[in-house]
Length: 356
Image 1: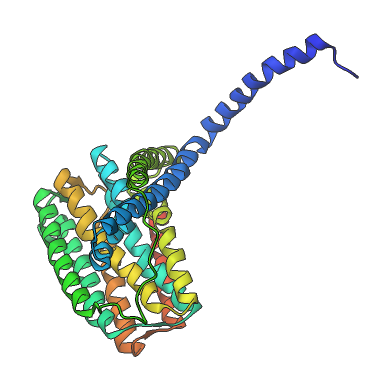
Image 2: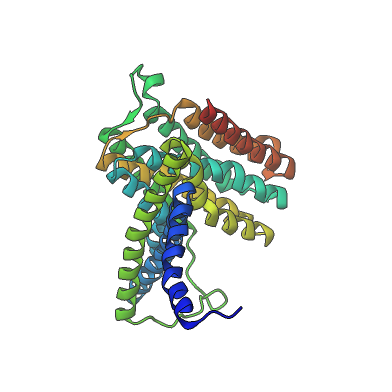
């Protein structure tokens, strides 16, 4: 049966209203709105960090800054920018459990699952420098975080709070770590020769660099707010604590790039990149990000407790043991499976804790 013109016009006018009505119902009974904001926020933060890093690196090269300094400052900072934006935004909005949960959960994810999966795909050969310098630095950062974060266990306090003095201690460790890393890189830095000189890159115009930096910063600010807003909404509608969301949803979402970067490097046989990507990220996450956040505003850890910090410390020590004692400088598939199983057990613990 054919509809006459008035009927068609009535349907056309009512269709947008009905669509909005059903979208509102969908948003009310599901987490459509929160998940959408969370995912869009992740995209903005990742893209913003990429553009910010590229623009800053291009300007640095125009002013003849060495690749060594660029790698140790701009590139290292750029890789941690997403977690820094998420945690700092959460701290400012008085959502400290999301801030700390993101960093703590991301480090646990990187150490147990990322390296575990990479080792299961292809055994990871660990260099002497990684065993004697980088793995111990990961253990040190995890141990310092455990001591500063577990006030109820270490100082018999009533609550676990990371105050400004704790943040300043972490920043001091960051300065020491940066200096040691710079000295090691400087000793290993070799002048370019005819055989290993880098391919010259076409310089980017200054105005375009400024647009990339400004656009990257804007995307980071907007994306960080959307991620925190979406994560808080997910926690509220699911009846989960903000700590649970930070340790799982936010941490996994922000660490997915680390997983793919390390996995691709492992598949191509570049085990040093696969491990170095995780190690550098974990150390900077603790010393730089939590240090800055705790200095800006004291962090009330809420339901994040000694078990969560202990899992990170135990995983760091286990990683070092697998690389040196048992695996003879190799993290094999069996050891990778143990690390991945450890992460699965930790997630199961969080789920049981949330149900209770």
